Length: 514
Image (cartoon, rainbow, N blue to C red; front, top):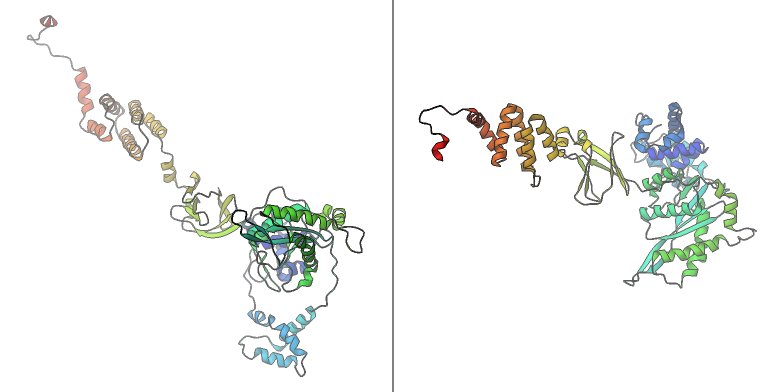
């Protein structure tokens, strides 16, 4: 399993193709990876002794933990240089006097690292063998769904501004029955493209084994003869629906001749019939497209005694995989650093989300959809939040905070009343008076912290007496009670209350004042 470790979304595609009965070579060609890579991942899967259904249900980070990444392989740069020149070498061989040895001499002339003559001839021979004549392709029912955008566009008029808005038209068809679907969307951007694919699957009422897109940017990030880079959102969609993405070869229209032909039919049976009509919304335009596409599917095919819809319903629809019960949401991927305050910021919304404080300063992977934000570190999910679109706000969970920060958030009048009750009944009464008809603030919390600390260090009777004095005088400050205790005012009050009057001969009685 040489080379760079593959994305887990691509590994899921590999496993599902293996489950559907595809051979290693077919998987290799479809995913653009070597046969040894396919073999290596399948060997690792077999060694796990786990069902494929359980593996493909895992998220990418959990699946990555199941596979041992192995040593990174060495990709020979010599082949990268040679492969782009093989076609020109084949053409040169047809010219008079040109030999393989001459081509090899010219090939190595300006290179430091190059193949030997025998290896050069081997790769050239392999390339020649790969050139095959075209043939009639036989498609199995419910196996493939071809998708593409038309070159021309439809339009509608903005009723408020009068501006003509041009729309892309998405086309999908099953090659076995040639049953088709079309929808107008605002653009070929990934959000609109994914919406169109979801709409097509909903229209067909099931999921094919393979979805074959053209090499448009929304489906294939980078075209390549051997290893096209598939858009990650499209891979996620395929994993959600339990299907496989297998792009057609770039600049090879014969690979997708049926969808190209279907586009031509859409031009004549939809575009042409709408050419003189004016629409005032995208929804209105799509309503007209639905009617015309239905007529197209119900039109008898040439030299056949049935229409596309009849063949599809009779031989294909029942073979499609059922649609999932949950809707697909596009996943977006970011790598962010956890700030000192224990939050990461989602730049699209300028909203902050908390992660456990242990990960402060570390880089984490963030996967978010329209409704959820998930945070991962070393393939472990460490936080999940509902996505909030309020700018500059914070979403946090108490369990993500360290102990003293969590304690700070738990501060409340009830907390201080409970703490005071453990120390002194009069202190509890005093705390209640502090919070009576007064808005809670940081100042009151600090005052209560001081009073509770005094209560812990002071004799219970003294503290009760000091609090009673504060209650009687209606002075509830920390310094007042501290001074009472420091100056032993509670002791003097106690002695004064219980000291009897001295006896004296000059003491007047009550009769004196009558």
